[in-house]
Image 1 (cartoon, helix red, strand yellow):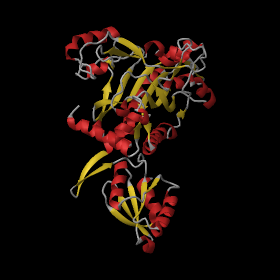
Image 2 (cartoon, rainbow, N blue to C red):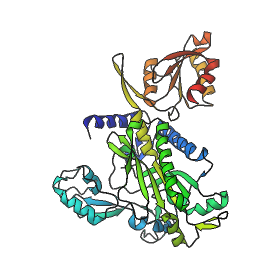
Image 3 (tube, rainbow, N blue to C red):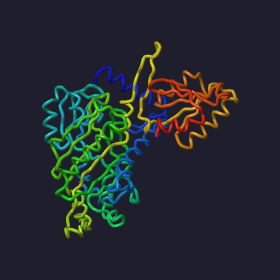
Amino acid sequence: MAKNEQGTMEKIVSLCKRRGFVFPSSEIYGGFAAVYDYGPLGVELSNNIKKAWWKTMVHEREDVVGLDSAIFMSPKVWEASGHVNGFSDPLTECKKCNVRHRVDHMLESIDVFADEKMSVEEISALFEENKDKLKCPKCGAQEFTEIRNFNLLVQSNLGNFTGDWAENPVYLRGETCQGIYVNYKNVVDSMHMKVPFGIAQTGKAFRNEITARQFIFRTREFEQMEMQYFVHPDDAMKFYDEWKERRMQFYVDIGINEENLQWHKHENLVFYAKEAYDIEYKYPFGWKELEGIHARGDYDLSQHCEHSGQKLEYVDQVKNEKYTPHVVETSAGVARTMLAVLADAYTEEEVEGDTRVVLKLNTKLAPFKIAVLPLSKKDELVTPARELFKKLSKKYIVDFDITQSIGKRYRRQDEVGTPYCITFDFDSLEDKAVTVRDRDTMKQDRVTIAELEAYFAEKLD
């Protein structure tokens, strides 16, 4: 990682803590590795990202419906999906400090890339070839244990009163899409869906990650935004290409610079996949996966059909045809999207000899759309300013701030990405107008209070 990139990342992490976006989990007890809490502004930003995704994927389409499946499912679901036996990362342990590391991440640090589909034997051979270049990231030693696969599913004792977790283990879901597959028939029957159609879901997933890396990019508890689109086998690649185009456009529409987005094709596919691409974002620590778009064939429904004994075929009564639909999957992470949005919006500008930090967030994502700032703490300004706040907050998320000078309040709102600040001053008592300041241009307009609704409808809606 280049020095300036490291600096940018540190500044983003600092801003997130200082301004109430992201906090380390259980911080008063020393924190809890790879788990984070979302503060007042972080929860607004993440909710806005999910709302934008849901609007694009569900509300604006007649062929996609939503779902909220349970975090806990029958263990048989994870056996059928292959997670119990095959959902793992390569692990090694430093013999000196006993810290465990992901082998593919260690190799990546010296620009040697191990594909996730490689076997333990293949990765071990790659590790052996490069062992003279590899050091423990913790202590610098070069002695490691034999590489083994470490399963990422998080076990629970839900409903298990024996005290033996190895007996009938239950898991927190490792991904949200399995809840979609096992509800495929319920959705078809209850909603009378016709192929092609999709089922979308946002929700928590859990993975027992070996190492925590890169802030909220890789965590043990995270939220996904996934959509499974069920299609006729003959049409799979046509719809796959269409969804690739739509998903890339989504990130442009929420304000991410196209220059920081690229496609990455998977070369080594799992046996059932037709094709797989990642949308990558240029994070401060390099190009990394933002979203995956996968042509998965009929593997998922076929597996659940075989293991459950239930018929999951689609019957086209018009064409008198019966088949197992193929699946086109789009899978994105809320935290990864949020980090990309923050990194893309983070800006430092020189203003009158001072450095201004501003988050140039898309207005639909900004936690606060407007901040109401009475020029003075005197009741004669605070009282009418609060009335204005109450009026605007019926439609927008609005902040009300009376602490420190107006200049410092502007800078604080710049740092959290608030698009517009309203200053209610002493003249407002006479002319019934306020000063509206634009975050990006810092231009100020005098707008009558009666015209504010139309003004913001044009700017924000």
